Length: 165
Image (cartoon, rainbow, N blue to C red; front, side, top):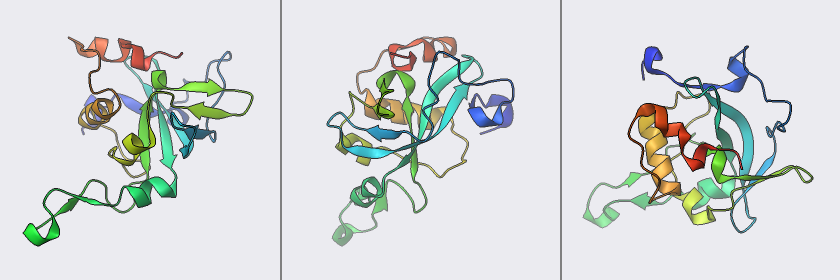
């Protein structure tokens, strides 16, 4: 992805952005799925410069997600070459900020609409990678298969999935 088209930045890389005073800083909080099973830990916050706010949580996934997700897809081995959805080192994924609820007392991020299997089957990336729109759309469709449509780029982060609950 070319830098002039880049829209997502890690909050810690933007000196003029910070977590708003009335919101908790959820970095290092545990992330749980709809059934309260551990998925990972919030490693960072991703800001859309066009939306001028945090739109994703960057989650370092739990090793069980990686172990359960390391199954081939496509043709069985006996029928030829097979592929893996994620590569070694792909241990991060993004979650739209509007798909989680925050438990401030226990410092837990609850993905109350996403089950463990969905997280296992979600495409991941390596820490520090640039996140392009193709990856965003693929992940979004995994979490919200019948998600809200948008007509323009400006409307992309205006959907309910990107609004803080």
